[in-house]
Amino acid sequence: MKRKKSAKNPRREVLIRNQWITVWRERLKLPNGSTIPDYYFTKRPNMVIVVPLAENKKVVMLRQWRPVPKSYIYNLPMGLMDKKNESAMNAGRRELKEETGYSVKKLISLGVYWRAPAYLTSKVHIFLALCETLPHRSFQNKDRYELAVPKIMSLREAKQRTTDLGSLAALLLAEKFIKEHLI
Image (cartoon, rainbow, N blue to C red; front, side):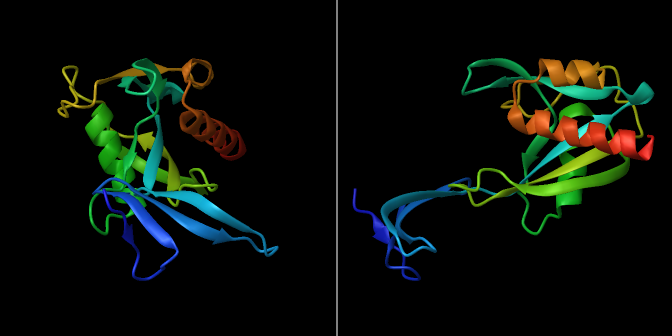
């Protein structure tokens, strides 16, 4: 398969491009003058991670099947900002509602971070959500590709159970915010 050179950057060769991911190789010149002949970059949409606080300061985690470990893990509600011009706040509200059934009373930004700055161009927006509405007991995620069930647990238990680094970082940021602001 013949690869396309970028018109904007002739040193860039696009290897994969679709609605979810773009991967390219380019000759990368470093600030010290050194050059890496073949450096690979990945572009993905920005994403959100939401730390939902329900009643009694309990965290709503998801027990969710993930394709890489091919097993269920505990992680927070998260997702891509996949709608055109969707704000991070709106994406956070949408993901929380879609994945847990909870509504947001107040959404607090805990920061914006690079996901993997060595090769990935996207950022992650992390939020603490003070939840307003309990979902109906029969809540089910309607996305047939998201095998996830909400589980309510203490912040301590959530930190112990998650094996997702993004979720752990978000939980630690939320814990710090909660202690500092006496929520």
